[in-house]
Length: 101
Image 1 (tube, rainbow, N blue to C red):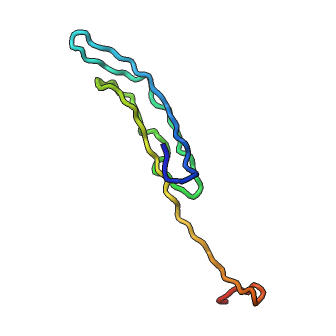
Image 2 (cartoon, rainbow, N blue to C red; image 1 turned 135 degrees about the vertical axis):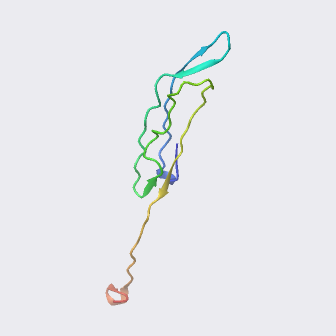
């Protein structure tokens, strides 16, 4: 998911992994094994904003586990970049001459 860029904020992207389970009939311990990894998404570049991550590559689920898998998410936050403006004052009574020159 993304946040921080107002109306320019991109929509969420999703990826799924299928997990297979194997339960030991003696110990009753269930082992969960992922079939692959999450699809990598590049963070969209937004003019005037900087994202705190280039992609979602740090979200992984390649480990076999005995803990039931849950949904995983990553929030990428945009921050407004530096901006500057130059203001020039003109005098309409002097045919648009710059004030202060």
